[in-house]
Length: 293
Image (tube, rainbow, N blue to C red; front, side, top):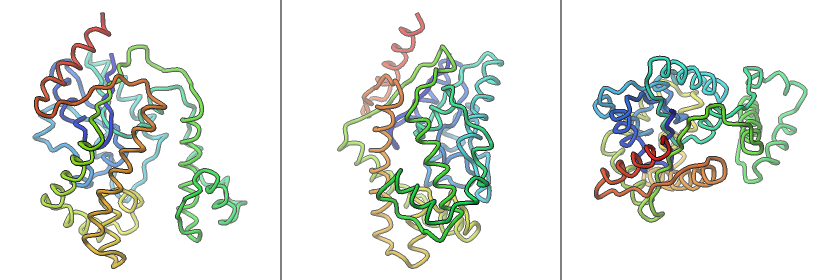
């Protein structure tokens, strides 16, 4: 059995994953594209050691912010971890909100390290690369003089299109897909409150220190919760507006997550009971047991 727990940002995936790991002798595989990076802690809502409750966590804190990580690497790493965990007679529990990572790992998509090379773009001008990008995202805002970023973004968009436009087979016959959800107004309140708690917990200092240490980090400069404050530190925005942008961008990200999940993953959705989370845990367990019969 492989359990997948996904859903929009802030909905309660981590808490459920810990409880299911205890019950099913599971080990967690991270499926959040930003939590693979060391030092991105507060802004990614990364589970603390205490919150992990002694449960082994994989593909968490595996890359420095001066390193790159991509879809092909995750696909390879996640599949290897599934094999490793199963070989120990434990249950892999894949947890996170990066739907593209989850689908690339569990379905038969043919990605390769060659996809990450930039050689094929040598004959293209920046303008030509930009024009192809516009075909993917007509509202794209990007520096047309930053060739490295143009190439990376085009690679990313091509992979996204591959994964969202085709339907290879599921590689594993024992996957249970769990989606956590709540009504939109409540989710937005949760997101806004979580951002406020991040600020209180030291997000500003975290971002400032990392920006000084890794000014060219692609992950740092694109992650929600970090890029907005970097704009403030670079005198491109006010502090209050940066915080409001974190909230707005997080809400918009949640919308995009729902779109992906509903169109690309066959999830069994559970409406989270925040007044009594044990009810949600029991509902999920009952569903898993029913599927396993």
